[in-house]
Length: 415
Image (cartoon, rainbow, N blue to C red):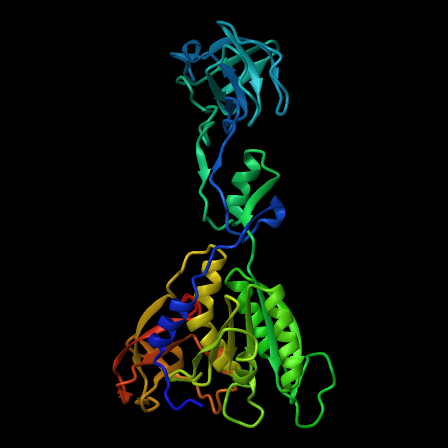
C-alpha cells in the first residue's frame, strides 16, 4: 500500500471525475425548523408590509395643511374626532380642522396624512392645541414601505438565519421549502475504541472521531447518522457499510486505513461494489493514509484514525462535497497574513499542514507559532490552534520571520 501517493490536487481531480455532487431534494418544514437550512425556492410577498399606513409615533393624526403656521407662540386648535388604537381598524375619520389621537403602530384613519408628536400637542377637553407644523406623510410609515406585494423577498440558495426567518414570518409564511440535509453515515473502527460514557478499560481510548466528524458534518449542512464503534473485523465492517450505503448519501469512516495488520478498510471497500477504491494514500502530512471509494455512485471517505488528521482531511476533501450536496455556497476559508515565529520544516515530498497559534509581537505584527503536536492523534492540537499554514511538496521549510498565509479556524477579534 501507498507505493505511489497521489498529490492532494490529483486526489481532488480523481474524486471529481468519479463523482458529481447533486443537490439534495426539497422538503417543506415548519418555520421554526427552517433555521440554518438552505431555501429551495424564491419567496414572493403576497402582501404589502406594513399592510396599511401606520403611525410611527404617539400623537395626533391630522391633515398636514391644518398645521401650517403652528408654533410655540401661536398654536393651532383642532377638534378631537376620536382615537385610534393599535390592532383595530380606525373608527373615526379626520376631516378639515380635526385630529384623532393615535398610538405608535396604529393604522392611519381616513382623511389624515401626517401625525403630530404628542410632545408638540396639548389636549384640552375636546380640542388639541398643535405647537409645531408637520408635513404630509411626516411620522407615517406607508403601506409597502418595508416590503411590497409581488416583491421577491428571499432567493433560492439563501441560508435561513434569524433575519430571513423574520422576513418569512412577516409575510405570513408558517412553513418554508428547504433543501433536505444530506445524510452522512459516520462510524469509527478499532478494537481500542470505547464510546464516551462507558467505563474506560486499560489500553483503550474514547471515541473522538465520531463526535468531532459528526459535528463537522452539521457545520457544513449535513445530517450525521452515528453508527457506533466497530471492531477491525471484515464481515462486520462489510455488513455495517452496506447498511450505511443503503441509508445514507455519503459515508465517513475513521481508522483502519494505514499499513498495519488490522488496517483492513481498503480491502473491505473493494468487496462492496464497483469501482471501489479510487484514492489510496495522498502525499500530505498529516493524513497520508486517507482512502476514498466510490460504491454504487456513493462516496466513502475512510479517514485516518488520528483525530487531528481525520478532522483536517475532512476539511480538505469532505467538507466541500457535503456543502454542494446541501446546496450551500462553497465558502473559501478566511485567511490572514502572518510571520513565522521559527523555522518550520516540511515532510519530504508531501504537502504539509502545520497548525499554528497567532499572537501579536512587540510591533503588533501577527506571528504564527506552531502548536506542539507530539503525535497527530492529539485532538487538543486543533482546540489550541487558530488556523493552519501550508507548505508545498517541493519546499523544505519555512524560515523564521518569513511571511506566511494562515487559513483560519475562527475570526481574529480576540487576538
